[in-house]
Length: 250
Image (tube, rainbow, N blue to C red; front, side):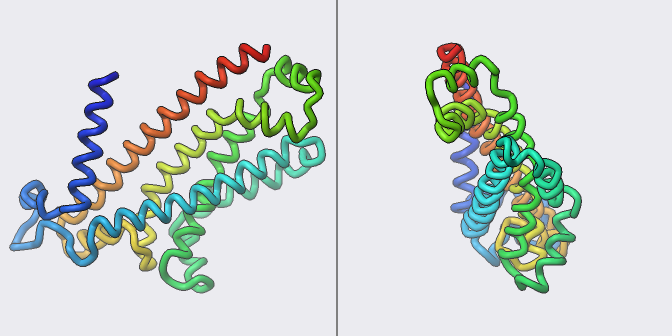
């Protein structure tokens, strides 16, 4: 466990070093260049692109989480069960339409830049969060629900104090999946002038510079692994905590 933690910390520090001072790592990418091509992308600072990339993903995931969890809460209440098919259809929109198609449809309305990318990531991230939230809220053990009602809790108190906390690990698993998907998908935002790490990859593809492609892909890939691993750690912590609480309530 400690060795794994040390490895993760070392990888994180190397990633920070790469995005903060990419020229220090030029020797790693020079073998991928040819005919005097530059080894490091310098048109836009790599740190700026990385921070913008993370900001876009974070905004999209937070928005998708609020909407998806809200829909899951709605359809698991007695008055909202009839909206389940509609909610599922809305959540499936992002998976039905490819992100590139969403970008193409949004550009005439929102213009070039971050806006279309946020919409595409938001729609693409709804389904995993919604389905996991639905599973978590409907998977509550009957004994726990009966104990909560027997203690005099209102429906609102039961939702906030029992259902959502117990469903939190499952919801977090959906958020983790959505975040990793968004991290990779956000790269296509640069096709509509969004400032993401896709700019480095696209520049490399257009110029035939494999070093640029490797830089952008490496940063996105390592970010995805570290964030997925970090959210997985919190998910396991929540599962242990909720398991103890569930046994105490039972």
